[in-house]
Image (tube, rainbow, N blue to C red; front, side):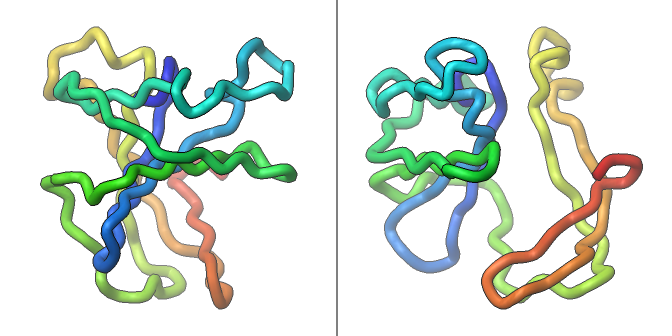
Length: 132
């Protein structure tokens, strides 16, 4: 959880850092202000309640996107993807929406099935079933 919003842990197979992908509006000091909290004012909490120490933040000028950088590689039970995404491949993404946070632990995460649509040199796009 990033402040009161959600985020996605990006754990590279190589390297000594972890990254958290979130929407930049989650980091705004006030709604629609386009002013963003400094790194020491952002709280990232794992589902078990542990707080993650952050080193830096990068906010996109053009998109509702921000990347939070962690100084160390986080311990994670996540399986690391080591293959390049392939077009039309089925994927699963998981969310931790605010409306589920008070439910039983087994019900808090939400699974979103989808597939990879487009692949470019340094990025890919995913369509979640029933959502853009």
